[in-house]
Amino acid sequence: MKVKDLVLIGILSATITAGKLALSFIPNIEIVTLLFITYTLVFGYRKSLFISLIFTTTEIFIYGFNTWLLGYYLIWPLLILSTALMKRLIKSEYGYAILGALFGYAFGFFFALVESLFYGIAYGWAYWLRGLLFDLIHGTSNFIIILTLLNPLKKLLFKLKRVYYNES
Amino acid sequence: MNKKITAIIIVLVLAALGFVGYKAFISPKGVQGAKEVTINIVVEKEGIDETFSYNTDYEFLIQLLEEKQDELGISFQEFDFGKMVAGMMGYEADPASEYFHIYINGEDATTGVGEIPLKDGDTYTFELKNF
Image 1 (cartoon, chains in turn blue, brown):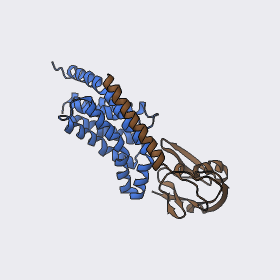
Image 2 (cartoon, each protein chain N blue to C red):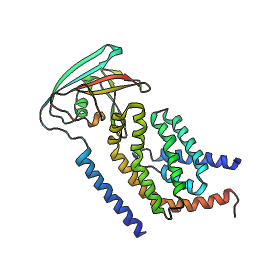
Image 3 (cartoon, chains in turn orange, red):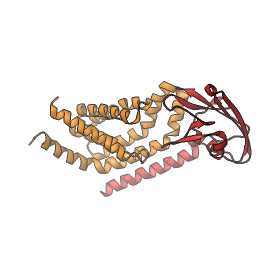
Image 4 (cartoon, one colour):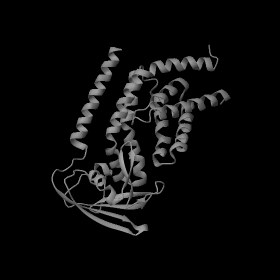
């Protein structure tokens, strides 16, 4: 990995943390999913996996260590790998919007699974049910955000990438 | 663009239906009418074991706790998903290692304090625990 790649990974990790903090006052409406999908499509899954690792570790510095952060180490790589695997199958932004929506709807369920490993199935079940409305907002907003912003963002980043790596 | 707007409207309508379904079938429902309930607070390390009986028309436990906040020495912490009991009888749980576990008639509560409906004759126990 070149120095340019390392710098890029650092900058992109910072954009994800900044993007999350900027929207943190609105529960479960975020651009992290959009950014991870876009970064995977533009910069590839390897760099994106590093970005997710740095992003989650930064979250620990900001919020302190919590069990839900363990889930973060798994769920964002899962999104990145799903995006990379679906890349050949998905031909338009609609497919990624659906992927982001499903990811948002399943977000609480995934964390309920992680929480139930620590506190038992009853707690995990309660955790999931209590968060269902937030998952509904999360998945729906992901769909709208990705459908409207993925293509312009992807176009811009491909352009910036060419300049950054001096590609013709 | 029209196609995208149509897709967004469809998703919003489906989300609204999901919301209605949640409210109708999943969200906890309060019980109307007069109730007599008991609140028990246990903080073993401070030697606190207090019991309070109340007659109330409130439908949810959180409403009763908010009204009796001073008497029960309660402090709340606000989260995206609602309120959490952070302190009782003037004792503040250490957020790094302690929390108030809720029992309803001796059984573990399966929802947060904001979603627990009050039922006549029920006992709600708040016990400080470590995690």
